[in-house]
Length: 117
Image (tube, rainbow, N blue to C red; front, side):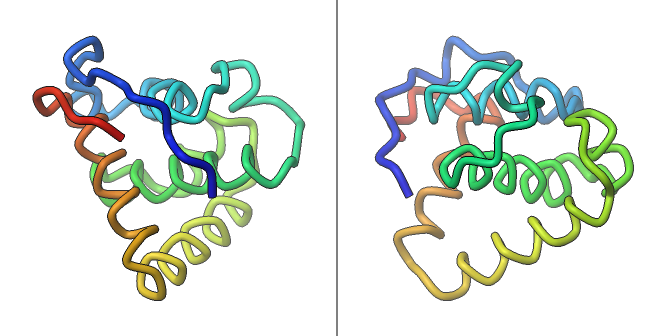
C-alpha cells in the first residue's frame, strides 16, 4: 500500500526465532514508519490496519503463533486476527507486488542480511 523506506535488517535481532509478536510488530511497524504504540493502539487508518494485518500473517506463518496469542499482543480480538490473516493471504495470491513486499518483510523479520524493503 505504501512504499517501504530503506531498512537495514542487520540492525534488527533475529525476531522470528524469538517468536515474539511484539518484536515482529515493532519491525513491521518500523518499515511502515509506525511506533509500537501505534501498532498496538486503537487507530484503524488504512495503512496502519494493513501493517497490523501483515504482522498477523507473519506471526502465524513464520513464528507459529495462534490468533489468540497474536490478538493479545496487539490488543485485538482473535477474530480480528483471523480476518486480517485472510485479507493478507487473498491479497498475496492476487498481487505479485504485494507478495514481493511480504517476502521482504519476512526477510527483515528473519534478520536476513542487508535487505532493502
